[in-house]
Image 1 (cartoon, helix red, strand yellow):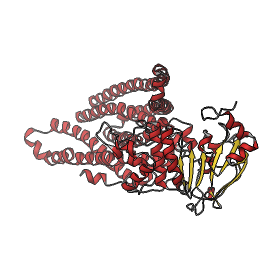
Image 2 (tube, rainbow, N blue to C red):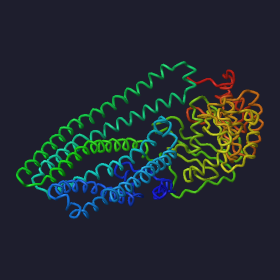
Image 3 (cartoon, one colour):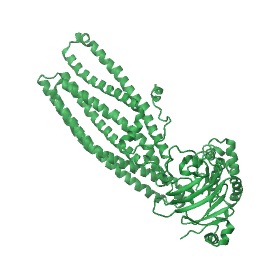
Length: 610
């Protein structure tokens, strides 16, 4: 039975990756469209379940009248079939309808909607530009992706379980009261009017308060994750108390937003309690008055009083449900502000994959200012020949890493073009471009997975033998063999911790180099690739890098000029421009900026410009 409901909808079915809508109604429609048939079926079944409960109250009134007007001897004879029919409703029809509606809700819609929203939002967000992640907490972004799924799901369930149930129950109640005596209707209609006023006037602000709470919660999660992610810095500087203050400020904001929301809910609860008390008193008194006047039967009193008690009990639950609906809509709306942003860097329509046959790179009048009026890269042109080994040199902030980021198309240019083998990189897919470029950076972050999985990231279809070979070339085999973790895993199966924190900087660097060796891309970028290694390991790997770079076009960045002095050509950058170019010896003889930097090195590092 479980499997029947679970197979009704596959939330992880293949689907095109598209931007979620940026407005609340289209956002809901986008995620609910594939399950609209199931939603309609669920509404029908839930509505019938609600009416079957109402039928029990009608039967209660009839039963009271039958007991009062029929003798014991004739009771079964006169009402036996009616009793059997109501027994069928009570023990078969209503349980079946309730179980069917709960199956559709709990086994189909609840898990499927949650997973569908999270999956699609995750796939969209993970393809956002680099700047998107650089400008926010990773924990905050993850919180938005994770909380939007349950919030959207609960919004739908609130409508089905709460609003729809109340509407069908109210319609049945009004019809029943009208059939008994129209004079019983005014108190109910007035109560409905007052209830609607409460909802319209007091519930919508809850959405704004819930959105504020959601944002405060996401910000708090971001602060906590930021502290934990950078726990080494916290320990090194002994700043646990400082992090306490940082987290406490987020918690104070969260607590204030939570209290504002709870105040609004409490005020609604007080008002509703007064309305419910007045409804129960008025209808009961009116029913007794009509009975005394001979207008209604004792059964009518029992049925109407029972219905009103049930209605007042439901009203608090329904109000909480409606409040929860607006809270969840507020949470969804808050999440949308992060999730539903368009991608800053996009592929052209029907963009092809990049094919690299030679590896020639051309920067043609490139201009890039990070959206500012000037600075960083200004009208830069550079030709790198196929198979040429080029070193980028310059003070910190000269634009070296930015140039590499533009080649990887982490950002779109503000002017000019970058071509690889004559193809403008803006006209090919980002994935295809990056598949042709291997990168080793100084700040190597590994995935919290096994050593083998991290190396295999360079080529997912690689065999284990390929992985071992790459590790050997990166001088990583020896330390990998000695690794263990608390779960009893050894060697290549050891998990490295978040961002590779369980490994030393040099070990992480060698894993990163092994990953790039395995990728074997025709273009190679080395951004301080050996900066985290000791001299012995660096010397060993330099020999392997010579093998790795053979036949490839290489761009290397290093502050230790000695590590790139043997490159075919050095490009000296200053304030986003190329100011010198030539070999190491040529630049020293020229006596320009490079010679100044070389002379000013202390301990192998460049002085930072003032």
